Image (cartoon, rainbow over all chains, first blue to last red; front, side, top):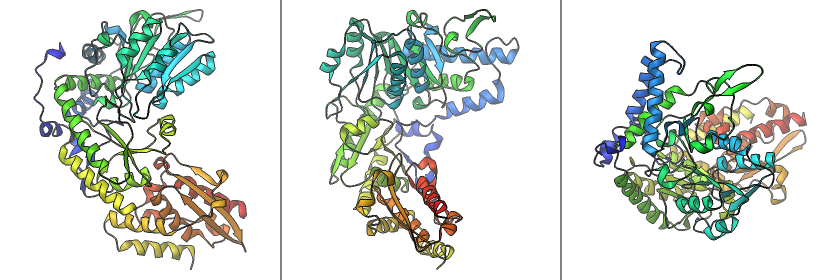
Length: 412
Length: 136
């Protein structure tokens, strides 16, 4: 079992050395990468695995009788099983490779959507990423279903009483984010899952922002689907995972048709392959899948509790220091929060601050973070978001704060 | 002064700054100084929605020369707009439609004109040229 491996004691310098992108200069300044919510940097083991795959093992998987195809297939399927163990999925075929969170949500929105009828209700929340809003709007338009939005309070927490009032036998699906990419709020997903199940609704958890920060156990959560991207969890871009319960996946129609997803094709009738292949049409991102497995092996060796403490410490210090700046406001002050610090400074545009931070070597994200409805709720054009990962240091936060103060001084 | 001469003049102004922050300090000052659009021209149809910052652009032809005024909610964007307008104002539509605006790249600000920057500037330059084309 991967989980039983001996954890490496947490040492931020030792971790940083494994991420080559971090040790570079931009505009003559040491790069300080605080855009981890958008994507994570990659450890050397993942970079090496990508090079190794294309140098030694490149071949199309499944069905190949030759040696290389078998090597690549074995590695691809091993990666699936590494990820299965990491998220504690009961069955290997419940772990589906996809292109990322967006692709995964669209896949379920389509396939599950096919089972819905007019008047059925789908619940999402006000803090969803556009990728967990638009596919449902498209589905509701197609199937004449009703989309309900769980509102939030000023701290950026879900109004759970309103959520409860939404639930009825009409509720077929609840799709919520585990952690808000903009606010950092950690949602009470266990409660959401349990309450949704009581009315027979299925639950999708958007895990894009949580998988890299906390241990995910899909059996303990009892979610019906858990979806995430590889690139936010130290793996390559263009690959992601949909975990889905077999009993549900078996009842859904396939999403895309093509090679690999079929059992037998004739012009009269085509039958579909079994899971997971039913949902994996065409040649997949083979190197992406294999190297995502490598990223999970890397992650399994880390001490997630120590990492959570470290990241919390960085974010808390950053928040305290930001609040010392006149006119600064933190957007997202939930009780239960991860290492995302979104903020605005009265009278100053996030774009200006982001541009000046960039020129001082600091990578943050500015704008609406693909959550425009959230920006409307807080009545702001956007925020400046610093999102921390385990390879960030206190010293980096100090430099960031100093650069931020300089930027604010220039703009006022 | 020709459009080309105005571009060269701006490039020379920026040559004194070897530090990025000094360059931006100057752009911010330009942004702060310029009340470059009248409120009645800040209407929806003049708005160029960027993903991050927004730009308003108003153009008219006076005595065969183009007159522009513009604004942005972000001050750096506004400063760069100020530079663009300085170069383009009082030029004939033909000159503007065919102008090669190299000064932006020369002073190292080309990233602001890339469509991925999403600050409305790239669309603004397009619209500047379109309005000149329409006036020809």
